[in-house]
Image (cartoon, rainbow, N blue to C red; front, top):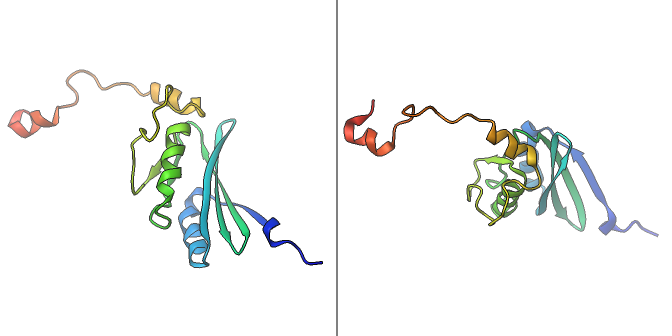
Length: 147
């Protein structure tokens, strides 16, 4: 009896720095993007990218620090990924660099910022605000009142 192809899955851990190269390679092999999801693991966020071809799944696991979560967007390779990446940004606080369509944290209307990753929200609250007068209003600068 032959092995059922629909049960074949591969999980590969990929460093964040190699994500785009790996995803590009997967695309050239004819895989389609199935989904992107994330989960919180203590001080780390794990993002799982799933790709399908001929009823087999290839899954890439990428980890990023929960307090300063940042990854490159795969939307240049798989444009529909903007939906997943905006959702993950809103719920987990991961910033996706070069995101093709970026809702800036407003993809969902949610009651609490980054509800599934409180560390991201706490890290943002720790950033001190600029002292009064340290930042010029862009209109003031254009009118000659700035530097």
